[in-house]
Structure formats: C-alpha cells, structure tokens
Image 1 (cartoon, rainbow, N blue to C red):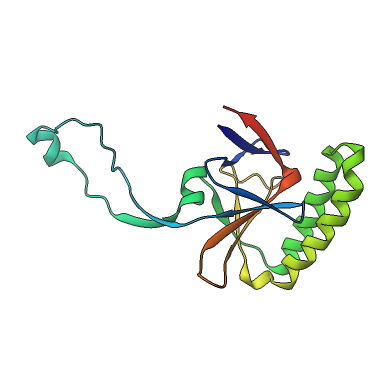
Image 2 (image 1 turned 135 degrees about the horizontal axis):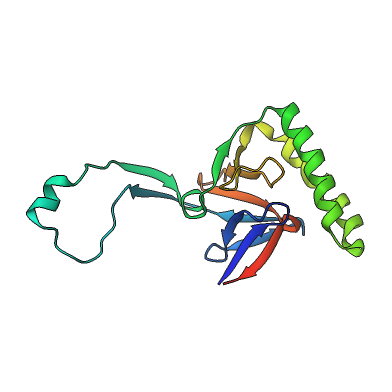
Length: 164
C-alpha cells in the first residue's frame, strides 16, 4: 500500500486505496463518493452487557465524502484573491523542492492548470491536510457535471510516495 504525503508538510493526504488518475501530467484526480458514517459505530464482535447497553451514547449518522473521512482532510475557505496569493507562494515553494530537470515543465504545466482553476473558481471547495498547515497543499473538490460525482484534485509534484 502507498501513502501519499505532502512534500512540504509531510501531512498524510491520500492513499492508493483510491484510484489516482493523472491529468495533464500535473495533477491527480481522485473520484470520491458519499458514504454514511456513524460516530462511535465500532463492531468488535462482543455482546455488550446490560450495564454497558445503558451507558451507550446515542450517536447520529453523518453523510461524508469517503476521501475526506478516510484521510482526515480539513475544510477551509478562500476568496479568489487569497487563493491566488496562496497558490503563487505554494508553487514557488514547491518548485524549489523539485529536481532541476522538472522545474521548467512544472512551471509551464502548473501555470496552465492554475488558469483552469481560476476560470472555474466558484465551482471548487478547498481542503487541507489534517494539521491544516498553511504551507501545505490545498486540495480542490469539484463535482462532475454529468453525474454529480465528487472528485478531488491533488498537485502531482506536491505528493511524496511512502510505502506502508
């Protein structure tokens, strides 16, 4: 199994349990789905005693996106101006970490893809890693027009593979 962490912050962002599809050689798209999650619903196979049953706390079921839930991603917000400021700094910091033979292609591809993001800015939701480090990658969430499938966008060069 592979875990993908943020190159700049080491936050855990995604695993290969989800299908990562490379787009334009610059980002990965990951299709997600809505799931129902019940807080505290852990089945260990034992029968609770009558006393334990009385102590149990009623929990409510939540509808969550599997990628967010499984990877403990944190929702965040941006207006267009603050996102552009963040993206400029993030791309600079990320380019500094890249090998020299990748930097030019990265800058060209990232700039082209960033234009697509800005053109459709209102369609995106934003997520960060669990630690919410402002230096780290901001993951984009959008929905496929044809069937409303949620999907996430991760910068390819911002991910580091870690074998588990």
